[in-house]
Length: 235
Image (cartoon, rainbow, N blue to C red; front, side):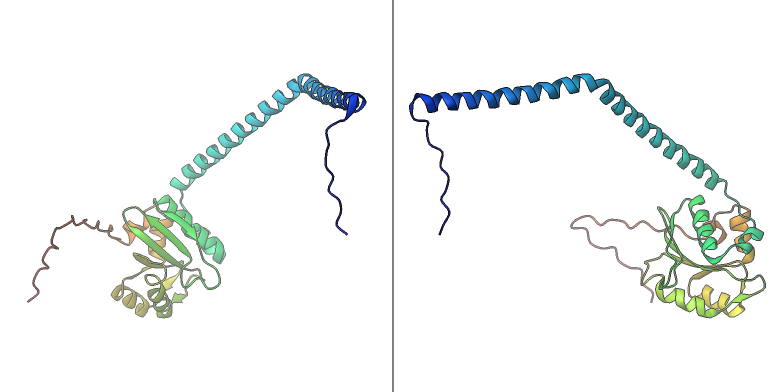
């Protein structure tokens, strides 16, 4: 059986009308009393609210300035960053990657550490307005060891196809085998051995100057309707 819907009806007779007026007045009085109480509470508590607002704003300003100051200090430290080879030798693999990242930042690159399991032969990636993208593969090892050609093969296979790198570099605190150097030079995989790492990290020479990395060529936009320039004949 369906429930009956409640319907309001108009008051009938003087008594019902009077009762309805009394109820309406009581409701309005209660509402006014509640609003008045809320207003009095707000008036009494406004100093607390104002103080809380001022405190919140002051904390926000302090935190913003503190963060900006910390960034300026870090930027100044990075700009003067010098890392002796002896310090690099004592680092772990991950610390070595972060050191290479900081050195790239010092040289004007926007760099980040990406090295992890399945990193596809990339530990640090940096971007530069004029030099494009650089991929570093870090090989931290004992002094006296030599990095072989297999690392060069891995970097060659992923640097440009996977990471879209303009420059690929293998960095070690030790040295490379002769075959690794020759293969890298032939296939445009740059290598940074102990001597080059010292010039970069300890002496402060930018990596792009150590490796003589070229600036990326700006592509000339062809105007609408303009025919492509003829290629020089090789015959």
